Amino acid sequence: MSRTDLPGLDLAALRAYLDEHRPGLVTGALSAEIVPGGRSNLTYRVSDGRSRWVVRRPPLGHVLPTAHDMAREFRVLSGLRGTAVPVPGTVVLCEDPAVLGARFYVMEHVEGTPYRTEAELTALGPDRTRAIADALVDTLVDLHAVEPESAGLGDFGRPEGFLERQLRRWKKQLDGSRSRDLEGFDLLHDRLAASLPISGKPSIVHGDYRLDNVLVDDEDRVTAVLDWEMSTLGDPLTDLALLVAYAERDQATARFVSTASAAPGYPSSDEVVSRYAQRSGRDVSRLGWYVGFAFFKLAVILEGIYFRFSQGKTVGAGFEDVSDAVVPLIAHGNQILKEEQ
Image (cartoon, rainbow, N blue to C red; front, side, top):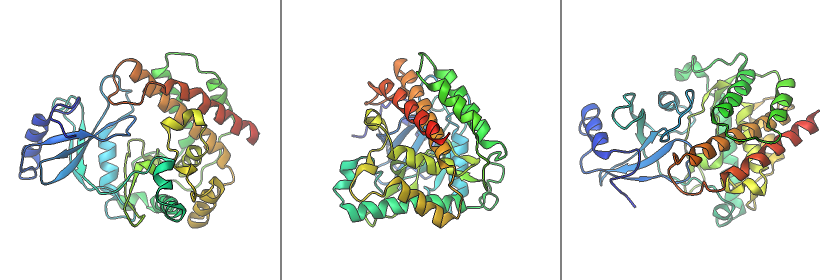
């Protein structure tokens, strides 16, 4: 249901900003609704009764210094427009936190479904499920094939030393949101640090690539890749590994990650990796390390959500048991790294 009083979104202030910076865009009174499913940045669907847009802003309250960079999301969306990667068109970026209490951006609304659960895909049947999963992998290959310079993103990140910095960054992220002891976390970190792979050719990396971060139309085509808050230039196998990690989640974490991979027709992890490797030509022989790192990242992300929820700073339902999902993710990562040794 659309409302005019959602937390973090002052529609009068938004309307005034749009009228000033995109005059004529809005033609009627604005209403909005929170887009469900987001676990980090807040996403709202906004309408003037005739047109629709999407507004993205950081969460309320506790925000880590390097996280939730609206300008980076806006820039990568703008850069990828016109490439083989489907993304929403950008409307405006506001870097003045006085308008809504934080920086935000507005993008075009794109039609499509973000499939998240096994039940949603099962209802489509195994053939469509396979087609959607294949499209997901192929879109990832297309993303990693984009030359950053051609998209104006040649300086979007520093690929040299990417994995080492990522490991350091994600540990720092946890240290900034750590309020309890997490069994096995330090061991997982140390195992990852002791066996860093040598990265291949760098690419634009999404950072949280999964089925419910893309929109799919009725013909099973990907119409938009969303949620670019962790995008950068770096090692593309981190994106592939995240797809595998989501598919191999423990039931204890199923509520907080996509369960779509359990649907009949969804390809196995080996099939996903094989399709990616064949179409991209990339070496995936050390993917185990990357999958272990993916579980490390997921644990940090969920612990950050738990921290914000415990402070009453996260909007939406479904966060009550998030704390129970973190340690199983850490255990998964340790098991994978142990098998790699």
